[in-house]
Length: 83
Image 1 (cartoon, rainbow, N blue to C red):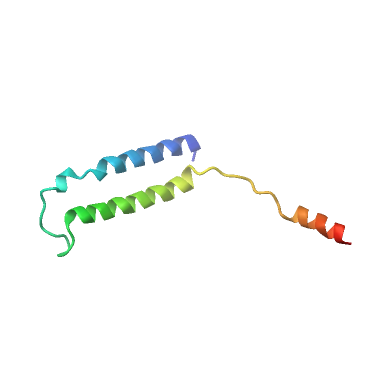
Image 2 (cartoon, one colour):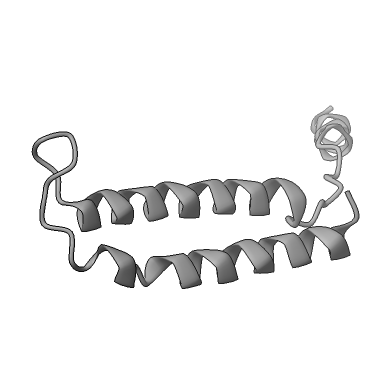
């Protein structure tokens, strides 16, 4: 995927999470979900999972790639110097 396009996808997901984080529609609900968990706590757990997924996608899509140097060349030079 193009890095420019990926950057906009990540920015969009972060803005979406910021908007969904303000859960004004759950303020009036008093009954627990699953019999023990308040709705607002469940919503925050889902937002946290969404943030983790967004970060994972950001590392896969928008993280820059670097070419690594081969480590065998310096080791060959030190062996020649030891002889």
